[in-house]
Amino acid sequence: MKIRILGCGGSFGSPLAWNRNGNIDIKNKKNIRTRSSLLLNLNNHNILIDTSPDLRNQLYEAKCTNIDSVIFTHLHSDHTAGLPDMRSMSLINDKIIPAYMPSSMIDSILTHYKFIFKGVKDYSPFMKVNSIEDEFIVNGTKINTFKHNHGSIDVQTYRINNFAYSTDLKKFYNNDIDKLKNLDLWIVGLLREDSHPSHAGFEQIMEYIDYIKPKKTILTHMTALLDYDKLLKKCPKNVFPAYDGMEINL
Image (cartoon, rainbow, N blue to C red; front, side, top):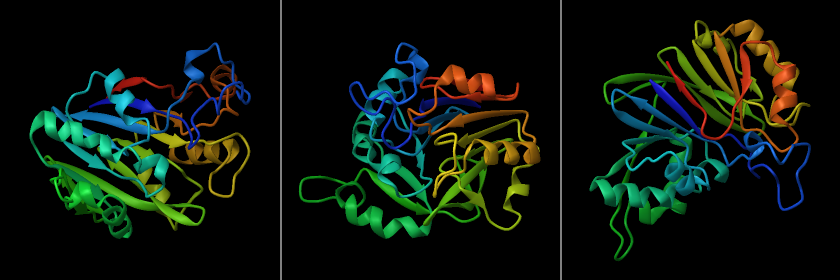
């Protein structure tokens, strides 16, 4: 499995705006973060997790001209607003692209992006909705999923073999955290150092890591309040901040 972090920023990206740099060193390219999305290549099948508003440029930077499947974590616009960019992937490859999502997302997605999934006037549909269960199959690969809390809504954690992705995480429900044991890699959201009503802070994420004990953890979905070098110095030796374009082979 080849994993590319297309974007690792929070909903505003990083920096926030011109001369609004937060706490980051603007000269360090690893602090320039587009909104969060992930590209997986598994058995020559390209799986995209979330369609960030920056998706077009992210795919261009990745030299990616084909997406086979899209998986969504939740409905927030920083994870879905790039959906129209899938039209070019459909046209280039002459195919309908399947989109996998929890049933709670479907009505809103079909309402906001009707032309994508149903077609409107001269626009033919170029994607198809698939409702997911706790376990589903994409191109012969089993994907396990469960909900975690993100403040007022829930978000899907996805596990594929010994890799898992948990963005926008506040807390786990029941004993679901135990489903993340024996991971080679966990990519998890860390919005900022202190706790947020919808996001766990640094200390809580470290507690989760201490419990799960993945071989490697990468932190994503970061605001401009987190400087790459400063955060790296604070992390344990097997925990790393993400950066746009980061690639991992499992």
